Image 1: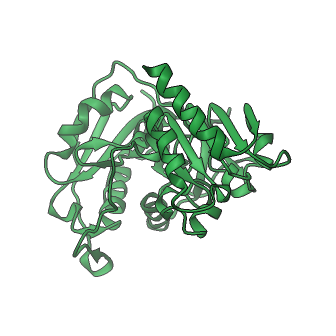
Image 2 (image 1 turned 90 degrees about the vertical axis):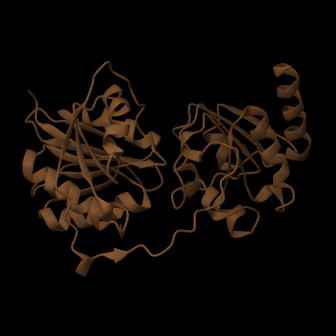
Length: 323
């Protein structure tokens, strides 16, 4: 049997986030995918069947009232406890805000090397774990490995296509011990308003608006096109900085990385930091009045023209095609 690879499960509201399936697929390239669920009692059992379908052979259940009472440290404690039991070949985490902090703290606790924001992983011929990273706004690809301890790797969202298996997962309890002296207690939660559109990272279609959209009111054109596709709305950093759209919808190196089947960029120039967050999309369509806009270097379909004419016409054409 191959060595275990620990995967921190990202979940909310009783459902897995898409990055978890991607992490399990990546883990299968290195060894035996072993999920670690941190939550209130019963959470692991609720998620076990779906985790098994995505390749997990075991699910470590780190459960208790402290799981949601403190920030970050419960996940660190759970992974450290699971690592002590299994001696994993690697630990994989999502490259999210929380995931990156968990990875850093776990690296310090286990005295192990950390590889951040990887886009792929593999085993070298000598059996060591190698992470592939896209750097300098996607201009270069590098390969790295740790020289100390167990490789701790955070994986970029949508970098790997998730695969399903016919497997089942055994739930194994692991003790969750959180030190209140070094933990921040959660005293209140203020979730961002959620609409009817899919999450950016989970959407098959993303329609993003840039500075060329011109105003917050004009983003209704972007929303209308996204809605007719059943997709998500994104925004470039320039649009967010201009106050056209909320920051949680920013696509790019300093925002959210997406990799949908279809990415439509309206009035987006294509700065390096934006391209780094969407360049792995399967099909890219760009609409911009500047024929020299950098976004056209990536686009599969480029339209030089006025987005205020093209976007409504495309929306209507899709609506008519759908009947």
